[in-house]
Amino acid sequence: MDALILEPTLYTVKAVLILDNDGERLYAKYYDETYPTVKEQKAFEKNIFNKTHRTDSEIALLEGLTVVYKSNIDLYFYVIGSSHENELMLMSVLNCLFDSLSQMLRKNVERRSLLENMEGLFLAVDEIVDGGVILESDPQHVVCRVALRGDDVPLTEQTVSQVLQSAKEQIKWSLLR
Image (tube, rainbow, N blue to C red):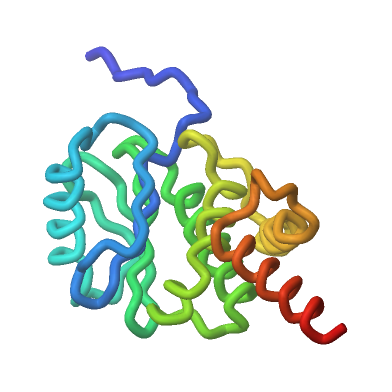
């Protein structure tokens, strides 16, 4: 009997998803071509939501993938890996993401506050996972790095909201002189 021996790999995360309480996508980042089209991604997200939104467990095996998830008020957070992936590694990514957002949003992790701070979410996910490789699992480090990126960033690397905020402040100070 031949056992299936898998080569070790750093590419552990296949996707990070955040859905609202209706199962609609607020954030989705896929790191491989398991679901190459948006239509397939949306169908997968709907399937995941339907299977997980009424349960209190934290892990599911779905369509040959390991799904770890957490819900909070009106949000559902998902981290997806292959069926052979270590669930504890995926859970550490999920906990890091949730705890980082909780600190950044001052414990107010809900749909409205998340939508108002999407750039922080994008930066946090990029600090935690890059191309499917887990980079960081400590929420304190993630929050510090996201905060550093927000200060004194060159204009070409700023988000639209940062540029608008900076412009508002400059106009305000020029009018007050």
